[in-house]
Every structure is written in structure tokens, then in C-alpha cells.
Image (cartoon, rainbow, N blue to C red; front, side, top):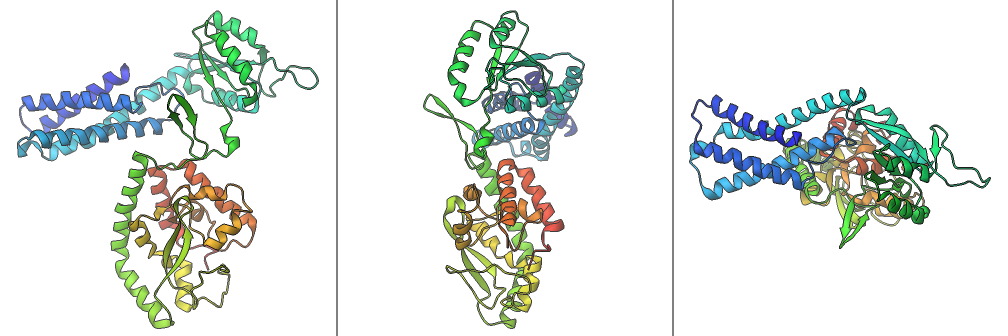
Length: 453
């Protein structure tokens, strides 16, 4: 309720400031705009999950929800305005300032509120007592997270477990207290001594979990189930519904719905800007390639793209040969196949500039795992676990692995494993801000490297 009240107040105050700064009187049209904005934003924010408990979630996720909700609100408002029709003087710079200032004000309010609540929770106010069922590695990870992040306002009371090991002893935690069995926890729940229970038992304890949840239905304690999905090499997992059945994806692309649209807009906007800046250098490079060695200026090679589909990737030709068969050798130091101009292009990564065409076409992205030759994919998919998961996203001109130094020749399996590790980490962590960070790192350090030859 506090969030909803603050949001509505900020919508009104920010609009009032804009009207005042515009040196005009408040009109009936302004009242309608504010009321409509408040109602539409409330509906969009509620549908987007903004008005839920953020006690155990990060601030960045909450702010991203605010931005998405407001973008939807502003789009709907502008659409309604154009359909209904208003005076041209009403659609001025002040309205644009208001549209841009609202999400900033809402984000700042969340930062302030988080700061206040975190300090109160550290002092013991607004806290919840948490018990964990299962002395497991996952349970210990949860307990450590709770005890180390006091700002969440969660107080860990201990482990409850009545499973026995091979020696007939009760399973115990290495770091935290074992309070008792599940009957003891159930008694505490009945007496209101615990507010939240997290079940961290393994999958095979399904029957015991069901029994305990059924027993807890006679209490008002909140219950969560935690499972170690990371052991399945989880890649951008999310909850979905198959009819009435909830399912969790273990391996999935991050680019669905609004995220896919954001990624595509990012590629088109930044790709077009970079292409415009690189047009003259590309013409000069093409001329240098043509005049210094026989063969085509642009070399295209088959690579694996999104979902393992074959695509043709464009590059400036840097070798005397144009291999794209069943036996492609990676470039090595002092490789005799590389031309004089090609050596400079490869060391500076300027040979990759024609891939901006791939980005505009939509079969590549600016940021993503680097595409490998088809023959290399067939080789490494058999040697490295989860190798093909990198193809759940479009390949990129630059990527997280490249800015961390894992580019160029992979003459050992360990080097390729490191590259794949960073590629999968990129997919798990993806966000628009992460892409911008990689793009900046590419400009700062990513054009050259010790393995670039």
C-alpha cells in the first residue's frame, strides 16, 4: 500500500511541477491525464508484478519492473492521446520531460525506501523468523545468504531434519545448529514461533515433503520449497504454466517477450550507429584488401547461429585462402596464410566489421557468444559438456568471453572450456545494462589481445 501511495503521489507531483514550470494554469485536460496515468500505471505495474514483496529480491530487478511498467503506461497514454485528439500545444516538451522524469522519481523513491527499511531490519524491526527443513548443501547456502544479508529482515532460527545417515545418526549441518526433527518444527509453527519455512530436501524426499506440507496446512506459516536446479546446469530458468501444471525451464533462451524486443532494438539502434561511423573505414579497408592480394574483399563462412541453424558470417578476407570445408585450421601465430593487411585487421578485429550486416539482417547480435566454424562445432560439442547451449542466443560480434581475454586460437581443450564458461555466464546474466558494459569494455580493451593473430 505504501508503494502504491508513493507512486500515485509522485505521478501527481511531477506533473504538477511540469505544469508550474510551463507557466500555465491547470486545466481539465491535465486532471484527466494524471488520473488516466495513475490508473494505467497501477494496472500495468500490478500485471507486471511490481506490487509484490521485494524483501528477498534485488533492487535492480525492482527498478527494471518500474521501467517496463512505465514504458507500457506512456505508450498507452500517447496512443490514447493520438486517438482521442488533443491540441498541438498540449503535446509539447514539458509532456516529454514529465514522461522521462516519472521513472527516475519512482526509482529514487525505491532506493530511499530500501535504505530506510534495510536499516530498520538490521536493527531487528520488521523481521521474520525463518527455519530450514533439510541439512543439505542447498540448505546451508540458503542459511548463509540469510545470515549474511541482514537487510532482508530474516532471522535464521536453525535446521530441522529427521533423516538418518548410514550410521543411524541424524543428518547434521557443518556450520549451523540442528534444532530438532520435523515434529518439533511443526510444534513451533503451531505456536507461532516461526514465520517462514524453507524446505531444502532433495527430490527423492517427495513423499516426506508432501506429508510435512499437509501437516503445516493447520498453521499460518508461509512455506517455500527450494531445489538445487543449478546442478542441472540451469540456463535462464523461469516458471511457466502448461495448462494448470506449473513447470520450470532448465534450459531456455533469455530473449522472450519484451526482452527479445529490447535485444533486437538494441542491435538495430547501436548497429546502425556503428555502421554509419564505420562506413568510411570499411571502404578504405576494402580498397586495401583488394589492392594487396588476389581474391574477394568479403569472405563468408558457414557458422552455427541461433538454435544451431547454419548462417553465413561475413568478414574482410585476411588470408590468401578462403576455407569453408570439412578441414578448417584455426589461425596460428606467424601463420603463412595471413596477408600483410590481414595481419593488421585480425590483430585489431577490424576484419569483423562486415558482420554489422549480419546484425542488421537479424542472424547475429552485437553482443553474444562468438560464432565458431561448423566443423569446430561438430568437434567441441562432443568434448565439452553444455557446449551447444551457447546457441540458445544469437552469436555476437563481441562477447563476455572476448573482453575477458578468451579470444583467438584455442589450441587446448581447456581454453575452449573457459570460453564456453564465459559464454554461458553471459546468457545467465543477460540484461541491457550488461550488454552496454560489454560494449564499453570492447571499445576500451576488446579490439586487441595477445591471442589475436
